[in-house]
Image (cartoon, rainbow, N blue to C red):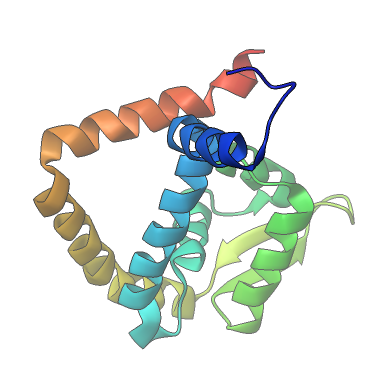
Length: 156
């Protein structure tokens, strides 16, 4: 399609084609829909899906600093810090100063461990629903594709 003479009809067609082909748009749309699915599952615990994921990351990286935790999560340090504060206010994590005042170390509290214990069956339910809908092979392939996509920027 020629871009120099776009009129309203051409713009509509271009918008549809671009939306259907755009990896970023489709990932963000799907992520929003999946976030709602996980949020509904965790609602009885007063937890969001993103908070569960962060709790699991802390569980796997006890006493990590914000910087150490932000890299594998693909999050900006400032965004991660804001999200950690929410978990801290809920009593799910503790944040202590490290050797350097700028290094804050994050750990799960006993309540955080308890919430994870309660949340895991809810998470498993969502996972099983997705596997039931898409099939185990498609989920496995999707996760592999997402991992590959996440390494594109790292490789450049």
